Length: 291
Image (cartoon, rainbow, N blue to C red; front, top):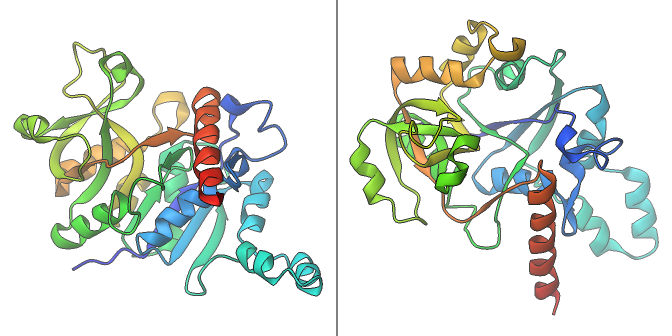
């Protein structure tokens, strides 16, 4: 049994798709309802059993680290005014959960960002959560579904896991698409269930005619520590960046990798249109809870 307790969240991106909102505020701190987007991502990780979260950022993203720290002056003022409940709600991280931040240094892509976390992750296996992707916390059980399911699957068979979701035919060209080892599994997918299948590889943004399935990568990964060795030996490719997909291909060839089908819905909080739709949805859910 392999237990995953570490997670990496890359937060170094400038969020150009979210300008002008992200000009002075990190895109990860833009609100979805009454909380910043990254709050939900970290809550998801904690619900799945993660105890140490590593944020990979840069000098202009210190506000994210500050969000997860205790503001002693604000805490004292709130408690002095008798607002203990509000103060407690701001210091919501469990005592056994640690949030660390390390700088990426150079903008060399997602693979490089994950590799930058190696000094903190060490020899542990770990999860990766992309903060642009926020999974719906209102319709799923974060302690059992999606990331939690992936961690449990990894603990039983040792295969790294990548979350995927069915997309419409007209959207296939926008994503990395999974090529399953056994294509009969595609017919077994019921649409709202976590299931894990072996994957032969991924095709990046294929045409519909060339797509091996309609299962698109969502932005949640559970990796064997071996991925670090492949990343360290991966040469920069497109755009001079170290591609995570290149290391995943090597991992597939050597150890095997599974995809996990997603339960519920996900939102791209790094795209303006999707972000605004997500904000409305999250706000409506929270307002309904207050009635």
